[in-house]
Length: 160
Image (tube, rainbow, N blue to C red; front, top):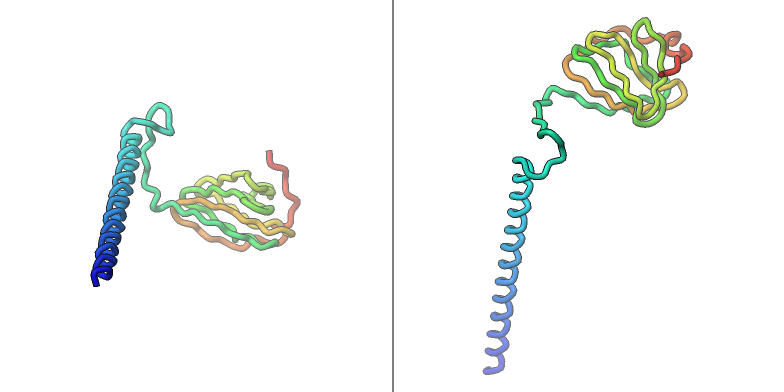
């Protein structure tokens, strides 16, 4: 019996040690996270900064729309315009775009293309290659008629 009680007391002692060790470790972890947050807050208040000459303020962008559209080869949007303009960039493949009355342009990865507010245009994939396009705009879109094959298949002008 005496030996059994000793083992039981030793187990209780070990489990108390484990619990205390776990609590101390959790406390140290909470303290470290708190210190990290305080350092970040100090940096944002004027300590370390990723900007020179002042820190920019974040502006509300709730109305800003960003989309990634994968156009299959040969597909394109109808003619349309945006009330605040549109910024496009092909991420993969080859695209095409045109402002009404202007030449068809070939869009390659990494080349941005901006259409001002109210300017009618279309964009899509090249005839034989898909295009993944990143589009950024705000406001409304006014959708118009489809782009005909004759317009779409015109030889693209070179971009400068």
